[in-house]
Image (cartoon, rainbow, N blue to C red; front, side, top):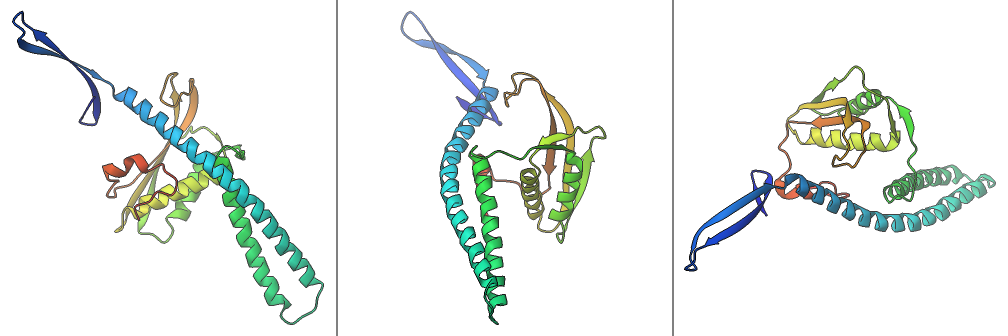
Length: 237
């Protein structure tokens, strides 16, 4: 198998031997197997994510149990302090409130890990992705040197999504796009309806989707890192 100009080829060499045992020439048969290679790479990526998901699920369950105890004790401490009268109570209660908020945020992360490991269920609802894209872009680029240009089809379909999860994903991607242009630039965001034919790489059987594309004019990702971009928490920063 050979790699040439971003395409993969499977080569078969057939030597033609004369009666005297001399190789007079070689017949070369080449077959483009780029699509097959992409499917294999996609399958390996899914297997890797599945393994990570099993590990993440176990950690999330254990961490969730610890947080439940922690939040319960914080709530109990706040309740007992409220029954007592002391000049320092208000300061201590405020510290407990902040600790409780931190524990709640940590609990949200464990829920995301559980969802990633398929141990949790996304909160799905049907809504317009157009408004979400515009709101997240405005929030993500606030204070940066970058602006945003939208290309969104007028008849864009509503989608069934977990708003919290998709918002976090879009926020991270848009921030990354902006940071790839340190001196400023334009982040291009487009959205359109697509229909995937049966047998596509996603194994979807003739379904309608909304395709979201986000691009920038930054330095890009070095080729040696491309295989790692979907690894959780991978970064070159």
